[in-house]
Amino acid sequence: MDYQLAQVGSKSKVFILKVTGIFFVGLAILGVVLPILPTTPFLLVAAACFAKSSPELQKKLLSNKTFGPMIHDWQKYRSIPRKAKRIALLTIVLSVCWSAFMLQSAMLTLLVVALVTGPFIFLWRVPESK
Image 1 (cartoon, one colour):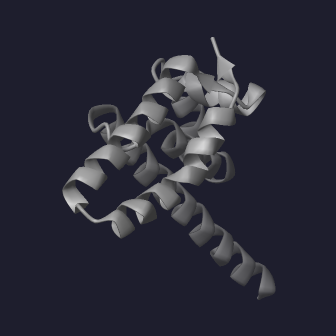
Image 2 (image 1 turned 180 degrees about the vertical axis):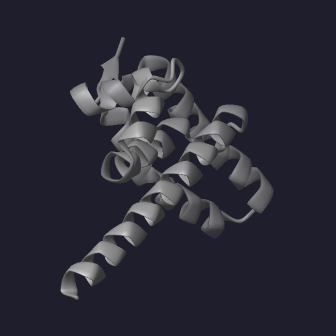
Image 3 (image 1 turned 30 degrees about the vertical axis):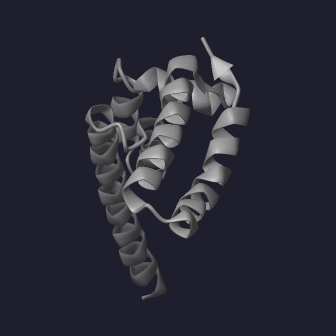
């Protein structure tokens, strides 16, 4: 009986990871079109979900000519392409400027700056590939 419960839990975990991976691939695709959303982090989360739930989907994602190289560089070298890094950093700066303009409140602008400082520093320090 315990084996059956473990198997059911495992099946539901695999299903949740697959759905989560597909959701993050969708967000990454939106990130290609919308400059507000970052593409690479969403792809990394999707790849991690697929690694634990679906080798087929992981292989498909890694063999994608657009997204595969970014994921491969991160997994192997812990680096992101120079262009992706620059776009991400520029997007953060422009988003903060736009937020400051729209919010017109020093306190809310400081809150936005505080929220993006960590991700900005992280991205700044990530090595560049190619």
